Amino acid sequence: MFGRFKDVALLLGRIGVAVVFLAHGLQKWNNGIDGTAKFFSMTGIPLPTVAAVFAMTVEILGSIAFIVGFLMPLVGIGYVVISVGALLSVHIDNGLTGQGGYELVLVLALAGLALGFNGGRLSLDHLLWGRKRARREAEASELQNA
Image 1: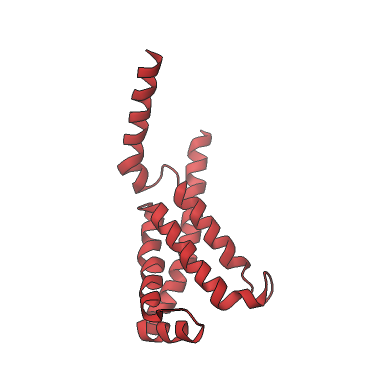
Image 2 (image 1 turned 90 degrees about the vertical axis):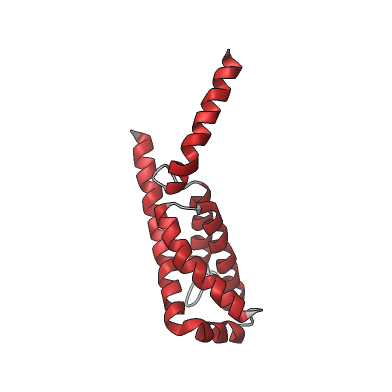
């Protein structure tokens, strides 16, 4: 019974983190690649057009994948990359807390990373690969016990 609650909590966590990243991705989408790249250039991010396409892809497509639980470790790492860029280019000078601080960026990056590597059984990753892995581990355990 506890396992079901854990899986629902992990799903809700994934949805919460993904919604925030998705909202930021949609803001970038509304600004367009050129507008986002211009902002990235002003903040000192190298290869601003490449960075804009990467950020928009991770924040929009990655967030949708994160919600349904597909390729979660990859999306979690993408969240960290984007967040480190935002932290270093925009938020670091504002300190941890306060106006423009990096506390939210830090929490979202680490929550995304943690959930990416432990997203629970209510995910496509578990459906596609987790059951096979569990079956192999059970078979290996049976062989060791025999």
